[in-house]
Amino acid sequence: MSNETKNKIEHYLKEHNWLNLGTVDSEGKPMVHTMAYVSDGAVVYFGTSKQTHKVDDIVNNPNVAYTVDEDDVDVMTITGIQMQGKATQVTEQAEIEKFGMMMYEKYPFVKDMPETPDSIVFRVDPVEGYYLDYSKGFTHRDLVTY
Image (cartoon, rainbow, N blue to C red; front, side):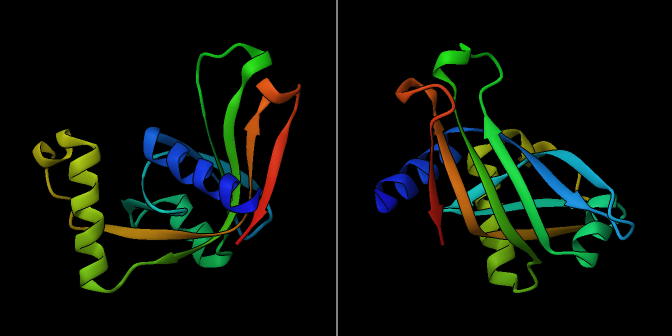
């Protein structure tokens, strides 16, 4: 079941556009950030301005969580993912360029956006996750570890 569940998570990430990223600040207060993202397998990438709370939070504590799900659902057939991972800043130019190409492919409008020189890229490597599928039973979810 584990490889099947991992494949479902990877497919779900490819098919959706927004994630809700949870971080914790230096005082222990949580915050959730809605983010556009791209994925390579179960690894998630996102870009953001250096001057954001999420950057400060990740520098302080790289352990993050996120969800990806449907906005308009029948509560009895919910599907989605709940993930925990470790966020790190991407510094290698080849990986930054790979991120850029994936963003252009997934979000074509990004090509028309102005450059933001203070942007940085993060990758989130999965640690543990759940694939939710309520069609198998109310609150059904399958756990995987990475």
